[in-house]
Image 1 (cartoon, helix red, strand yellow):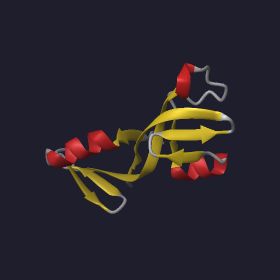
Image 2 (image 1 turned 180 degrees about the vertical axis):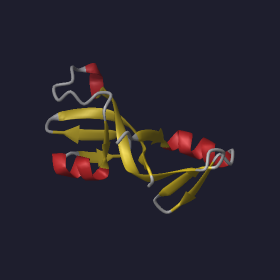
Image 3 (image 1 turned 90 degrees about the horizontal axis):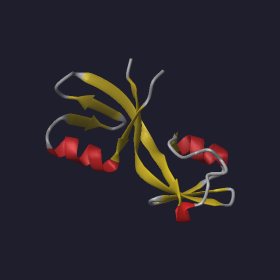
Image 4 (image 1 turned 30 degrees about the vertical axis):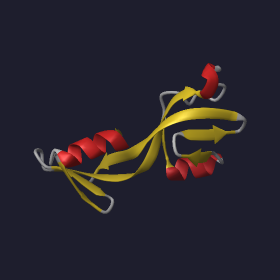
Length: 98
């Protein structure tokens, strides 16, 4: 099933514009009437300091459960995995609600 990443910034803009309605873990796109189950997640943007990515995480999205299973530490805009610091974009991952 395809998942959609929505940054916190984008979610705030959509909410201010009335394009979405939030109800707990559900997000409804008002214009389309489509509903998504959402949960907190991060998008791996780059390795801090511009070093190479030894874990092939850049460009990937991981939700809180996945980060916990990996043993990664998430704090604000960074994630430490093993011995590598990543800069991340905080947001939510959504999957179409059935």
